[in-house]
Length: 323
Image (cartoon, rainbow, N blue to C red):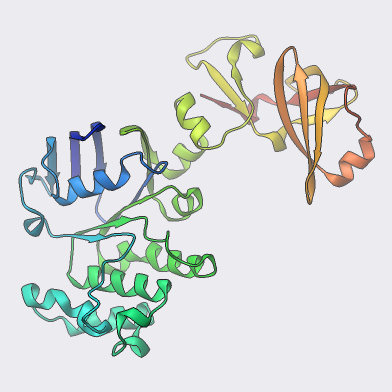
């Protein structure tokens, strides 16, 4: 439905560098990256707010040089940008000036987002969660083919995020739209996305199905950004393949005083022990490499581990993530 090819944009000292990806019909795409990585700039470029190099195609048509009003995309900024001089209903119906009325859609949005009791209220007296739902309703009421969401949950109280995420997840099928949502929040991405793009320092480093990106990073930079632990060179395992590094989940490493029947068992020495609320973090030095292991409090008491003592760290090949 949307195809971005080699999008390049220089804005001051920042560069969006050769970004390419596709969005299918009724697909929820999340662009995940740190603050300042170029996520909002990418959304604005897709919306037509910046002149770019490269190409943007929508439903097979080259729209690279189309102005924003000709693209039929909805844009929702993180500060919502509601009209303070209009009440809730007039904010939602704002696009009627250009696209006419659709009372069936309006009523559906009001029910879906639970806004009926707010329709006559002024914007200034509303909570962040209420403003978010109103801005979302206004964007969808303009009948866009693609909805662009810029950090839509950043100003929302954490107690309301689950409810609003459920609403967002239903949007593609309920309103027959595709969504591109940018965020730095891993939980949002893993819950909402059909596909995830990792964007760092203006480069799209990986773009694929959500589970594949979150479970199989294809570069060291992506793995570190996603929070993978115990990343080491493959030479530690004694074999070579097309990957250079591997990672092993701290919860999948078995720590013991005796060597066990696992695919890999390494002898090491406990460097540090940290007691957390419901578990222990153990740091073990294996030939100069520091492994991080998580174990339950009960198992820690059973082993009675002490700093400086020798232990074995064991894990199976099936639990390794190759990077």
